[in-house]
Structure formats: C-alpha cells, structure tokens
Length: 329
Image: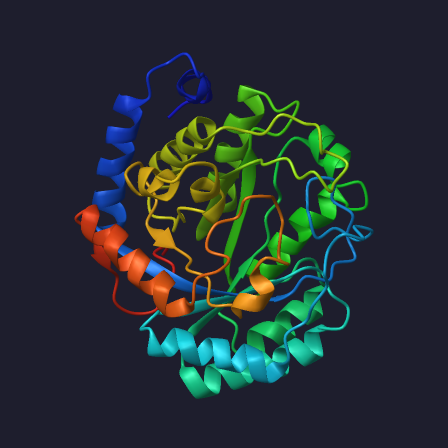
C-alpha cells in the first residue's frame, strides 16, 4: 500500500468498513484465527524518565510507587503457567533498582521454572546489557518509539534521544531478540502523514510485534489539558499495520478497551491477534497508571482469564497454542 493511500484511509472522513474487512482477511491469511495470550506482569512503576504523557513519569508525586520482589514476579509467572498462557510480558518503568544484572537473574529463574516465552519491556540499555538479558532467557523485547516524527518525539519525550531509541532497537535485533515497538495514535500535533510514516517504519524495521494504542491525556502530567486520541484513529492504524506488515503480532491493547468497552473486540476484528491479560498483584495494578481509566485493575487473574475466553468465544475465535513466537522468517 502506498503512503498516499494510507493517508486517505487514516482520514476520519472516510468510512473504514472496507479497510477493516481487508485487514481482517489479511490477518486470517497471515496469522490465523487463534489469539495469543501474554500474561502481563507490571513489576515496578519507578521510572527515571519524564515523558510528558506518562502517569508514572519521574516527578509525579501523586503516584504510589512500588516494586515487586523476585518472589512476587515468580508467583505471577506461575499464575501464567497455571492459566495456560503461552508467555509473559515483564514490564516496568526505567527503574535503576531493577538493573540488568538483577533482572537477568529473575528472567533466568522464570525461564527455568516455567519454560514460558518471556518478553521484556524495560526501556533503554546498552548493547552489552541487552545481550546479557537475552542470554538469561528473555525471548522478546518491546521498546516503543511512540512517534516517528522527530519534532513530536522531542516535545513529548524531552529527556530521551530520538537517535538512541532506534540504536537500541538495532542492538536488540543484534542480540537475537524478537523485537517489538509501537506508537500512540492521536498525539497532539500528530498528522495523518506522520501516522502513515509510523506504519511504513514498522515495515522497514521488520518488527516482530507492533503495539498501537490511543493517546489518553493523564491529568497528573504536563499534558493534562490535551485532547485525547480516538479509538477510530487507533483502529485505522491497526488495520493498516496488519495489511502492511502482514504477519507481525499485533495486540488489541488495554488502552483501546479503556476508552471503549468494545475497544479490544473491535481491534480483534480489524487485524489484531494478541491479548495481554494482567496477572500483576491486584493491589498494585491501580498504581501502574500510565493513563486514567485503565480497565482490569480489580479483577483477579482467574477473572481476567475467564473474561478473555468469553470475549474470544463471542468473536468466534480461540486461544492460540504454544508460545506465539515471531512468524517472521
């Protein structure tokens, strides 16, 4: 698909029904009807970064900070195994307490005890640190760039370096990770052109996983008064990403379900093939508040599993078998 055609489809004035049907067909042909479940472990909400959109940014005194212990992380992984999830996603802010050496030890224990596929989402590190985490047993790494527009990146991530973000993605691939990234749809100042460029960049980077969610303004950040993005924009990006990347794994993100009760179901109908039910300790979920209104903060992991199975049944879909590794060759 050419860039101009993408821009046309991204316009809110154009009926997306044909786009969604095309994306759903592309999804069925490339990755099938089964949906991969990744158990999400949010193990620390400490973060050294000051990204303007993020609720756990450094300096936000309203956040109740927490760190899970190694034992708690292992308990979460055991829960994922018991619930027959094929993998876990270990996610945190950029927390210096959980340095690569400590994290590698936990990754090694999770892998040894459960055999689950492990995705890390812990931010920027050095080339050697990524190699250490890969050697410890982590299979995948998610490092979102949020926008390919250098100007917007600089506005909303003032203490991050645009070029280093993409160096890190290259280092991750070099280390042997299956690599994921993603963006927000509806950032203030974002254009249809920059959204199309995001999708083209997904293709050029040959990403194994792509996550897309709507920007949701957080009242405890510098972007408190901004207009939030829409589910419509995020769904159009998901659909186009499926068509362009073909067999990348694409989640129906929690943010989509947070702005629309049917958000994740809609995403699964227009290209998505992954869900990430939360298996973090219930008492801490509300504290991992990247944005307001986040769903699934009070349910026990067993309840989330039941909800997901009911959702898939209503869509005529089923759980995928196995770890759900990359389909890229």
